[in-house]
Image (cartoon, rainbow, N blue to C red):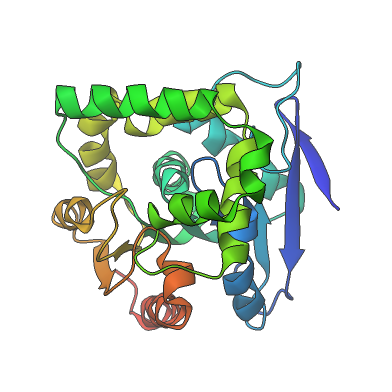
Length: 282
């Protein structure tokens, strides 16, 4: 299994597919307390057309946080680590496909390094208004669930089902519920808390609108119609801020539309990439 050391962390990554003439690699970034594993079905399909890179963010999945690892959990720090990874692999430009918290990183990356991104796909993200009581309650609940993550919960089917219901509109196969819980249990507490605040903290509610306005690359926003975590209303607000943004809402899906409606999701992404490829310059 390939690893590359960045900021004191051995980052796990996978490369699938073949680089083709005139194409750029597609990079997949996962969300909070997740791992690159849930991108596997989409990558298996996409690898028939292009080279696909997925990796586990610092402190999540197989990119374990060590004593020497960076404790900077800002979106900018994770963006620099992505830059270091694609530099290591020799990628000049990429199509960036990012989800949830990973979409916040993808948004930051595209604004920091616009010359390195050809096309941007942001799934389950948006713009939100700050409501103190709602946010503080959310942070309190999140810190409780971060603290209470015994490994044995992975082996209990009722807990797997209950955990999955929070994220999807219609239940997926139990193997996905197990994967979600396994990733959740092994995530670093420091990384979980740090990225929670950097991606959806009070400051983010004021910074995200400007971040969407500043985007210079063609961008596709994808939302699940029934997403309870990041409602589609936030993506609708974001899409109104910049003519570079296109919005697609996938019916009857929650926070994982790439798994709940894989064919629809993939068709939307491929259509976006094809249409923007064929658009005249400017």
